[in-house]
Structures are given as C-alpha cells and as structure tokens.
Amino acid sequence: MPYHDNVVDELNLLVKFSQHSMQEGIKVHHDADISLVEAAERLHSKGMITQIDGGYLTDRGVETAEKAHGLIDALEVKVG
Image 1 (tube, one colour):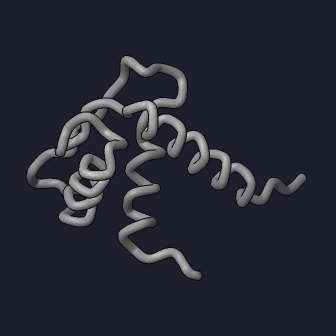
Image 2: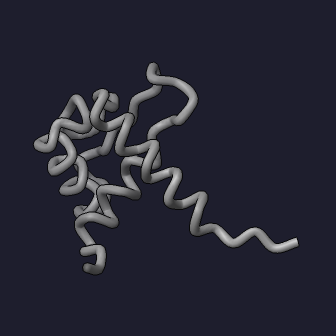
Image 3: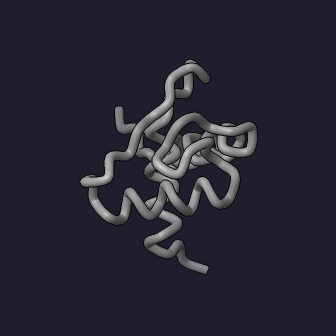
C-alpha cells in the first residue's frame, strides 16, 4: 500500500521536532503552506502533538517521530 500525500506531510512535520529535547516545540503559522497546516491539525486530532498548530510532541508523537526518523535513516544511501 503506497503512502498518501497526507501521510508524507504528517511524517515530514513529525521529523521537524527535535530528537534531542522534549522542551523544543514548533509553531505552524497560519500563513504556512496549507499542507503543513492541515498536517498539524491531523496530528493534533490523532493525539501526537499538543496544539492544533504544533506545540510539543505527546508520548505517542515521540514514538511515531522516532520511527519516522528511523525510516529516513534506513532509506538514506550512504556512499563511500
């Protein structure tokens, strides 16, 4: 089953959160790209971020973001 654009947008937003500090949140401004605004709204409704426009990752969001980072790391081609 292929990834849909909405899922890719949500994954891209999740990996914007810091992997090193739970104290660093993000803010998706109202004038940001509509796909980013909608991704934040969906992640909030899924209980992965604390605010409809970003905020902080919830426990579920941290777990999902870690998996998203792991997927990116696994797919990156390291030549040399």
